[in-house]
Amino acid sequence: MAVDRRRFLGAVGVGAGLLMTEGVAEARGEVRVYLGTYTTWTGGGAGLGIAAYDPRTGRLRSVGVVEGVPNPSFAITAGRRVYAVNEQSAGAVTALEVRDGVPRVLNTQSTGGADPCHLVLHRGHVLSANYSSGSVSVHPVRRDGGLGARTDLVRHEGSGPDPDRQEGPHAHQVLPDPTGEFVFAVDLGADAVFGYRLSPEGRLTRVSTARLHPGAGPRHLAFHPNGRFAYVANELDSTIVVASYARGELTPGQQLSTLPAGAPTTPRNYPAEVLVSADGRFVYLSNRGHDSVAVFAVGRDGAELRLVEAVPVGGAFPRHLALDPAGRFLLAANQNSGSVTTFAVDRQSGRLRQTSTFEAPVPVCVAF
Image: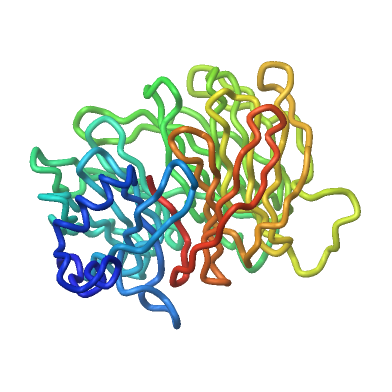
């Protein structure tokens, strides 16, 4: 359960050495990025991918893979620690730590649910959204960064009108609000966003339920920096909803299409990720099927969105989007074309311009 040295050495030349690779990256001003994938899919990766990112150009280069991490479809970083879901029927989450420049697996814990697809670090706990079982699990983080035994597992209830995707609850994302006081679980199957409080002991208590319109299929949401609004990406009907927010309560408001007027109805489109720029002026959303990144201008201090453009993503089925820490570049993980495309962000207009493409096996997440 360590980094495959052959892949590291292949990135910089045989004989350079594993730690030398880290030094070369630092000398170039690069930062480490983790790439989520599916290890059980044809053409998928061998584990959690590692790339070096150049913040000056937005380019990626492969530097290794952490093997022994099955189906790490979503990952997050916290300093020297990394947490990744293991999206499989016997769901689990894996904790890693970077020691001497090398990411190593600390431990893995069962989520108690099926197909975890998203997680978050919140108040000293890792919370995971189990898609197939429609539940959220909680694990405390040990002092060494590893995960303790599960302290809670809450199961959602509800369904929607789509017989193929909404026969029951399907938790797709879990994230805290900007204050850190509340945490939300977005459920595609229930057409709802459930709000919780997390106790110091790692127990979740429901405090609110926001109902989206029937058949929406909410997948992910993102908060505006001012904390008064959130934007919900709906996977099943290609809409984005602006919700007002206060003290643990989301109230859905404006609803608009994620596609430009006149966009073809086939193939079917499935929105995935939604992001808000650090200055709160723009919202970005990935359209899978239309294969574009929708750019929305934010108005009325967050209360309103206007579609600016839907720029071709340069790949197929863009699942995850990530803005680099400086907000200069946006990266799109194109699941079905095996590529990650980088776009330069125009800070004034919000518009995107593709600058580079990086090949990766079934990329579904980019974690800075």
